[in-house]
Amino acid sequence: MKKFSIITINFNNKEGLRKTLDSVVCQTFTDYELIVIDGGSTDGGAALLEEYRKYITFGVSEPDKGVYNAQNKGVQYASGEYCIFMNSGDLFYSNDVLECVAKELKGGVDIAVGNTYFYKNESENRYAYAPEYITLWRVYIGINHQSAFIKRQLLLNNPYDETLKICADWKFWLQELVKNERSYQHLNIIVAQYDLNGVSYNEDTRLAEEHSVMQQLFPQAIVREYEDRYNTSIDRFHSFMNEFDKGSFSAKIIYVFAKIVKKIVG
Image 1: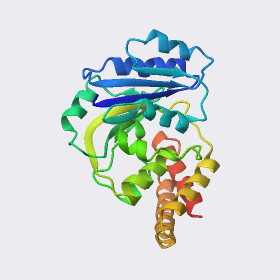
Image 2: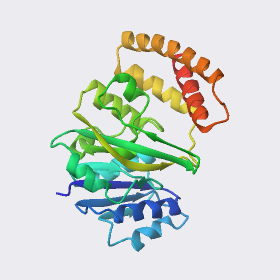
Image 3: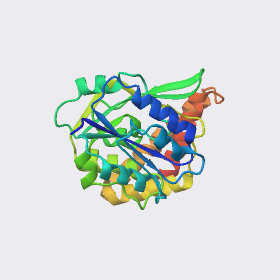
């Protein structure tokens, strides 16, 4: 059994897929398998499965029912101890990432998460650090799947919710790390580089899904307490924004986050 199953999902992002595959095959650690699930791309991306055939353990190009359906499919074909999702456009931060992770990873831990480098351009970039330990708040604000190593058996037993369009990975973190208290390790390693260019989503859909997930997973008393705390936090965010350069990249991130949380808590 391989140590890692790298699962890459792609749909009509040929150049992003090429960058991701190059990032994988350059790894100094070789005890991994590469699974590529292409959703029937029409931009030539599917042809890369043939070009990189000697590196790809399993690859398929066929229509699917969305990214979470494709990720679940990838897990079904995987055989490694841990899965990591490096979708088209995602990159390993350096060529020795897997080697460093393999050395630091504690035996038997369910989920291990490293840090992420977010890139937009030379002047607009930042690092996102995974939590040292798990709290509801820290999981709520997000864990980057590009930097997460998840036990394959855990994903088989608890697949992504394919009824959700945007938030199935977020639901998975809340369900497994917070509610089910799976074992967790913070990896003090920058695992992935995530390109912010072209990132978009339907905010209303995300908000509706997040609210529904919270209602499903947690008692109403906890949700209410959380809403009270969030309302206080958002007031502080707005005060901070009044003193901040609203044209800067960092300010935009904070402002968007504040808007999202404000809508969730009403």
